Length: 228
Image (cartoon, rainbow, N blue to C red; front, top):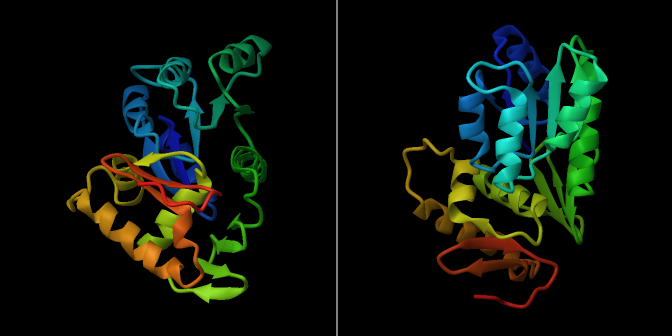
C-alpha cells in the first residue's frame, strides 16, 4: 500500500511517516503545489493532507484533484476544530478529518478504516482475490493455501492490480507506482514484469484474470476470458 503525506511541518511529517510505515510505503511533500503534482500521478491508496500549506492550501489541492477525477481517499489535518472547516473539507471531497494534535493510534485506525472501505477487503495486512491471498506484512502469496513464489516487484504489481480490481491501470501508472516516476529504468519494464507475474500464476490458472489492453495497460478482473 502507498501513502502520500502532504504536510509542511517537517517534524510532524516525519512523525506521521514513522507511524504509518508499518502499513504503507510512504512519500512526502512539503507544500501544496508539490503535493498536487505528486498526487496527480494517481498511484496512492491514501493521502494525508494538511490544510495550512505554502503555495496552495489543502482545500485547493483537494479540489484540484477531485476536478481531475482522482478519487484517492483523503484524510485532512487541521489545527482547527471548527465545524465550518470540516464542512468546507467535506464539500471539496475529503473522506475524513483529524484535528491536531492527535494520537498515533487514532491516525492508524482511521487509515485502516478508509483503506478497508475503499478496497473492501483489506484487513489484518491481508489482501485477497478469489482463493489468492497476499500477506502485505511478510510479502507472501498463496493460492488454495499453496505458496506462490513472487519476487518483490511481482508482488507489488499483483498487490496494485488486486487493490484496483476491475479498473484499467495504465503502464504509466504502474511504472510510477512501483518504480517511481523518477526511476532510471524504462517503461518496458512494466511489460516484462507483467509477463513474469503471469508465468508465476499460470500453474494455478490465475494468469487468465490479468487482462492486457494493448497500448494502454492491464486490469485484474473476475472474468477469466482473455481480452487483448
